[in-house]
Length: 527
Image (tube, rainbow, N blue to C red; front, side, top):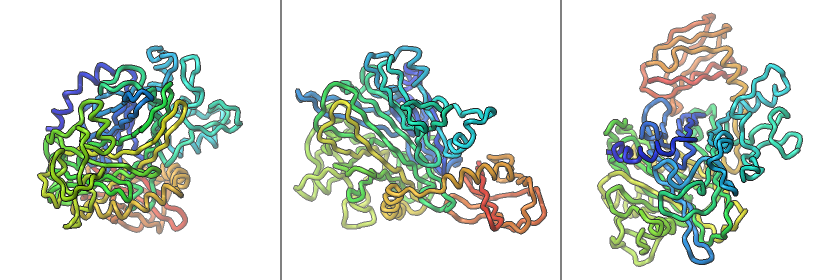
């Protein structure tokens, strides 16, 4: 069972408890658990999956995800940082320190944190930072824009808007975090604070990750089910690395972890996971999605993939040594042998072609003549997947920038949902290139809505009270589910308080009131 597998790592988690922080990014329909110890979308405290969607449903699409980094130095020696499930396996909280000040209490107090900021907080800071009564939110006041050079940390760290261009992040001067999206969570880690649990040799990495959400009033939009990730990888070490690979590792569990399939599409730089049978039943304490199951894809937005593959928890193809991990990152089997198109996804299995490939299950599962887990008739199971990006040379003091989108398809039949992911990949890429959003509008309207609309209790079982500060006569009230379907609507009269009963499944809903001039929205959670 999945949770028993996870409990094997509890000793690691507690041994590195100092500085370990967890935050929840829930700026749209996704509730994503973010950690500062190298593994994300996983709840260390409960050994439970940490990518819940829809928020409040207790249904999850990812158990855990992390990154692997590896390359060869000039002596042809492998340097590798490869995080799997354990907290602080190869990555540790805080920026790289050139004088190894990792155990300094000041280092811990400054950098063993996670920073979560909303666009509304930033706008409020811009508008009010000179007001003596204004209190700066902690994530803005402690934002790690500058590093303490006496601790061996780079002077410039997290991105910020420097209002007076003095080179220092000072919120009292009006400076503010430079985030993306309507809500963002920022993490800084390094691979040099301790030895690597993977057995890999330390590189000297500093890793910055910004996870961010957009929310749009088009409630059926893919954006409301997407998490974006910007990653900056900085070589703070002294060695140039050659044939440097970055690999996104993911243990996707679509509800029930034991009945999944995986695949990839190299033309759109995406790997994905979907249900392997017609019913995603609940199992082992996890809640399944039932007959209408979603799928989930990860898209590389600014780099082409050189390979993507998978292995199951029982296939024996899981890499365990640094050399096996690096082989996998290159699009080979863990033993270094090539992968051939058309096999059953197990090392050494024959393919239908003698031409090697670095992409496993690379065809649409709806194509009966393609190569997928469907056409191979594999038994569904617990899958891990990965996708890799290649950088020829990674020199000291240089940076690699990578952007990703984690996209979930709405519930439907498992294979139909894969078509949705493929269809929306172009839309995600177009939005990434030109991110016109409603964040500023939503932020201001949200502040107004909080003053006008009160909902209690929230969360609720479906029965709640709507209280209005002002009469909103002849306004239209709607409640919309996460698929964009209207589940309740009425026209408001002179009433200032309503008792509403929703007989709908658990999940996240949006209550909107349109008075003809403005739309006010409040999130509702049914549990």
